[in-house]
Image (cartoon, rainbow, N blue to C red; front, side):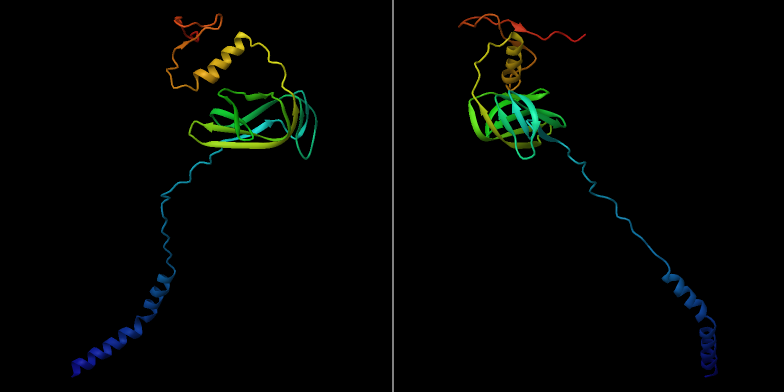
Length: 202
């Protein structure tokens, strides 16, 4: 019995002596802050800045492809007009549309197309650019145009080569390492076409 009483007294003494230290430890533990940083498992993708805009015609008055003065509300055109597209990024090609009808495809900069056909009143000019990563960007603008198609002019040899390369060879799925064509004489059935290779770059 005495042993039990002595044990109780000792226990009470221990409790009376150590609570301040335990409380201090308790308060100290409350001040501990643990921050867990989660690694970025999905890094933000870079912003795709590929886009296209119609740099010509602007909101202005045009006469025979020349800008005379700016307008604040619309575009008015008398005569033919060269439609120009400016691309931010790398484009494979740019298509030119009038009222959603494809009129021309340009594969090289500067991207442009001369709109010269008999046409009147309001129409919508649209360009569509295709990037090397298969992204498509579009831009369009309404215009009022009054034009009677001019008499077609004979193409120069340089113009014919440009049309052939841009509208026939590049859009095709053929092997582009060899080009074969003739521009000096008309082709006839059975003619042999000699291969033409671009001159080596020095």
